[in-house]
Structures are given as C-alpha cells and as structure tokens.
Length: 305
Length: 209
Image 1: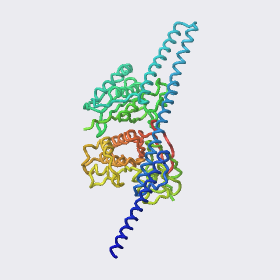
Image 2: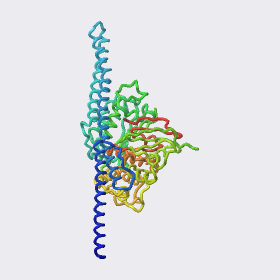
Image 3: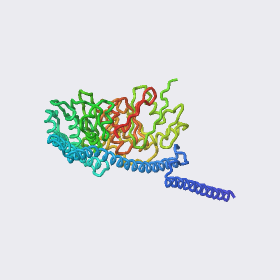
Image 4: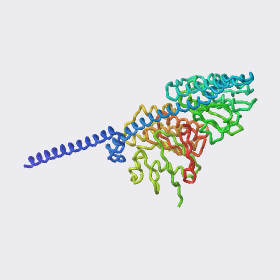
C-alpha cells in the first residue's frame, strides 16, 4: 500500500516537473523570439527589464547593443557622405578665387592698350595664381585621399632622425630666404612607429608655417623627448603665435588664424598634419604665447618592446 | 540651497570624445556623477542609450553602471591585491560574463601594458596605473567611458601620454568618452569642448573636427 502510494507520488512529481520545465522552456523561447524580433525590426526599446541580474536581462542588454551598433554604423556612413560633400563644396570654393583672377588678367591682356610694365605685372600675377592653384590641387588631392580613406598609412618602426631631417630639407630654401636658422637639439635616434613619407609631409607643414609666420633672422628649434608610450617632437618658433581661443580651430580645414589673414595661405597645412598624425595613432598639440613663442608638439608611438 | 548644476542641457553622440572644462567647484564632477548614475538630479532627467536613470532603484543603477559605464578616476582605484590582468577583467567577471580574450589582449596591447600583465598596482608608476584603469573601463565594452580628471595626479609629460591613449581609444574602438578636466591643453584633443562655470554651461566650443 505504502509502496503504491510512493510510486504514485513519484510519478506525479515527475509529471509536474516535466510540465513546469516545458512551461519554462516555452516561456524562454518566446522571450528569445521577442528579442530577435526586435533586433530584426531594429528597435532598441525592449519590454524586458534590462537592469536585473537575470539571464534574460543580460540577453536583452546584448540585443539592445547589437541594434545600437547597427544604427551607429548607419549614422557613421551618413556622416562620411556628408564629409565628402562638404569637401567637394569647399574645394570648388577655394578654386574659384584664383581662377577668376587669372581669367580677369587674361581678359585685360587680350584687350591690349597696356604698357609693357603693366603687361609684365599681369603676367606675374597670372603666374602666382596658377602656382596657387597647382599647390591647392596638390593639397586637395592629398587631403581627399586621406579623408576618404583611399590610402592607408603604413606606420612601421623607422628612425625618427631621418624623418626630421627630410622634413627640414623641404623648408630649407624658404628659411634661407628669410635667414631663419633651424636648429635641432641633440637627441638619440630612436625607432618610432610612423609612415615616413606622410610624417615628413606633416612636419614640413608645421615647419613651413613656422618659417612663414616668423620674423627674418629668427630661430626655429626642434627637440625630441621620450615619454613612456609616445615620443614627443617639439617645433618651436618665435613668430606671431596663436591665441588660446584659436588652439582648436587652427587644425580645422580651411581655417585661417585671425592675425594672419593678410598672409597667403589656404588653411590646409595644420589640418593635414593633424590628420596624418591621427591616422597613425599619434596626435599633435599646440602651446603658444602670441608674439613670443609657439610650440607644436607631435606625438608618435614608441615601438612596443 | 546650493545648485551644483543649473539648466544644463547636453547631448552626446555615440563615438564622440567630449571634454568638460571648468574650475574646481564649477559642477563638472556633479555632471559626470549624474551621467554615470552615481547621483540623481533633483529635477530634469538623464537618459543613456535609452535607459532613463531617474527612478531606478539602487540595485538597478548598480547593474546599469556595470553594463553601460566605464569609470576612470583621478586616483585610479585599482584593487591592490589583484594583478594588472585580474584588475582589467574584474568587471567582466562581476557581471558573470565570459572574457573576450582577444578583445582584452587588444586593449592591453594598445595601452602598452603587455609586459605588465602579472604586475601588481604598487609596482607600477602613476601613468601605468591610470592606463590599467582605462583598460579596465574599456574591457566591458561600455556605452560611455567617463573620466574624472584622469590626469589630475600625473605630471605634464605623463598626462600627455595618458591623453594620447584616451584619444587612441576613442578612434580605435569608437568609444564614446566624456572627460572632465581643468586643463585647456589636455582638452585640445576632444571633438567638442564644454566650458562649465557655477553649474551652468557657459560656452560650447567645437573641437578639431
């Protein structure tokens, strides 16, 4: 009798637990189904509690992350498209001014009735205009390649001394014209992770500015300092300088400093320099006291030991 | 009553690197604490990735922080009896998740901590300890990384090093970062700079882009 009752009870327990497990599985599948449905529908708002210490809450949290990552990708694509559009419109705008002045001088020359002095003057201006256009084209091509990601920088361990001296040689003639001396403090040549060709470009842009905005007969100093992860390369000049309010703006595309509007330039050099540094995991900072000194510091990654 | 923050209206996009600049006592830390669910506003609301923080219980907030927020503090807050690697993966283990070893290795490598995995916090320099704290904050793939004066205890050279790493993090991992600092030079690398004074946003300057 007792035996029969025990068997009955055990059987009942079995049936009950099977039934409960079945219900639990059904519920869990339904919940997972709902989560997948909302992923498919790209909806981040799920009805489950996400701030609970349960398996379902964790799952929900991860599903929401997937949806958000997807939408972030879409937003990023949209932004890239916008960058390209604004780049195109900026480009055409920058080209317009030199082009229209060239065509104006050509018209004047075609009309005739000019003294030979005037003719010479106009030809020189046309020459300057075409030079500017050529230079602008050059920068724009570089910029669009970097910006759209058409070329990838290849940072490899390479001695920094050669890179620095290559960049100095690019501005030597301009510096000599103003009798500006470029001096590098002695330093140990260390291999740094960088793409030499592009880094030379970035450094030359900073040095060109230093030469352009410094008085004749002044000095430009280069120094190298090792930090634990990065190596810092300082370029110090004693030119017009940059007010702290403008420290961030000067790295923007086509931005010209307020105190240098009269000097020729397109506002691309520093923008390119910061882009080049960023593309290889480095960065650039500025520190300046107007009319006293200005230091641009480039940070390149040390080689991992 | 002192208003630590008054009428602040701020939206941060995914992947953005924002610097909040202000003197001590300006309310910038309060702002960060509210974004991270450490403080509740008396009025107004905070929404992070669709989670409305107002009205959450303490337990819910704890879980929310664990899954969504990475904190980096001025004084590192590493666990002294755990080594570097154990410190980094601690928050992952706390939430009962399996460790994505590839991802953790990538972080460790990016932050230059490869040779230091087995070291204990007291064997590291300040800059290294802060890098461990950043790695720990990143390990859970948080929605936001909140950094409160991350370079406050570091000399200017080491600060620049740690700053570079933060910048690298924001670009390489598309990590949303909100960083508090009183130092304009440190703020330079952010995508956006917000100036805060007496609890009010006084100026919103764009960063480099």
